[in-house]
Length: 81
Image (cartoon, rainbow, N blue to C red; front, side, top):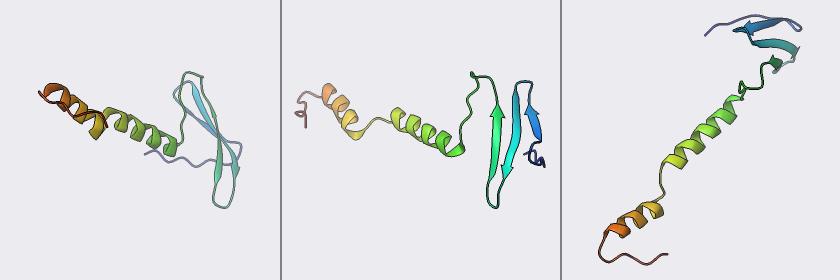
């Protein structure tokens, strides 16, 4: 991890297209401005974690879906619940 010290009004660049500027420093928060092209996604960590959890749960079939698959292969499928 790269650690950079900046004051309010100072900025730094990530690559050629993303500029990070320190806008405000408070007692327990730092307000950061990000200038980036619209095609670059910028997400807070908590939003990214939620997205990853949603993707993971979408990949895992529910017990009900698995039972329907099993029933479709058996001779006497159970009725829908």
